Image (cartoon, rainbow, N blue to C red):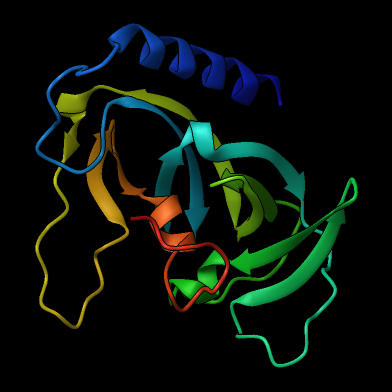
Length: 179
């Protein structure tokens, strides 16, 4: 998509201008930058646009025997076998039907290509650091480790997610843990 390519180039240019040391970190774990927003059930999430390789329409993947429920299977993407993760199942969201809006966000994480099924893609937003608030602290029963911050965008509340940490989680078994 042209919108994603342009946003990625702008974000890379801004990151290269910051230089070593850069700007001080925001109080949330999320930094200012460009985010691809998508829907899972009734909630809207955002991920760093630099992790997005492309967006594809959903096609039924080839199922892998004895795989976890969130792993829908694999697809062949121009000669690369890509695991497809249903984020709705992984994040215990309400079940949604696969329809014309269901898409796969193809991610490039630590030189590994992974697909994430979402209900729909909304847009690409640039968020300033002061627009991002820290995620609330919850008890040990609620895993908030993948939530980097919350942003209010007009009337919408956007949950910012560290997609690298989520895909690197031990229960995923897809990517080596981030050290």
